[in-house]
Length: 289
Image 1 (tube, helix red, strand yellow):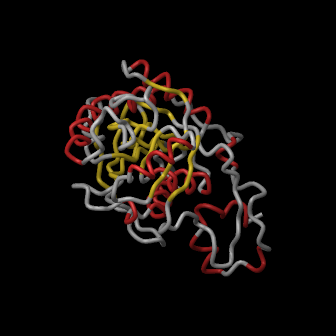
Image 2: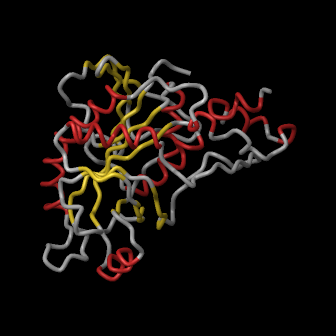
């Protein structure tokens, strides 16, 4: 394991922030392929932080092309114990307006084409996703957003759609009827893999639009969303810095740090050596007992 405590996944402009001292750019190889980009390693608020551009620098990767397994596996190898995700979303409720932040606590899956577990190939584990984000980080993120002067909402459900197209009106209206709060294309797989890797995870959902359900607002399209995104970047930078300053060291008894306890059900004697070696950073402490 490495020496970096906190990981941040977001846009490539997120780490261009005041107070960040960049030490290096590091390439991390994984058995699942390449992460989205190199990791920008630096110091922020006295903490060692690894930043990763989710879509690659220059936004080269579609949501379905992001190698979520490689991204989170690399964070694990770097020693990351907590991941802060910053993500653009569409609002499914009137009260969540563009530039607001929703600190999510639930997800709903509408994706179809994505690997979303580290397990398989002779090793089976079933982690709990009843509460898919770190409760401690949610509370601290809300405080950090308020300190930054943002309008923030605590809790909510993120519907993760496949993309890359935005919703049809029919889809958007149905999703609203289900009671979800925001819609996006990326965060569910991150949350799932972070839980399997025993990494704390929280999402700062930065609202850019009202999808296409709102009768009095223009339907979501790229140009309008990019304009709000630019406004949200500075807010996101302040919130991330405030949150990093608030995060306490994670104890060995933290629930997220023990998510795999009791979850591995395969007889260790029957796990293929290749699979065991591939997942050593994630499962090694359980299989060596």
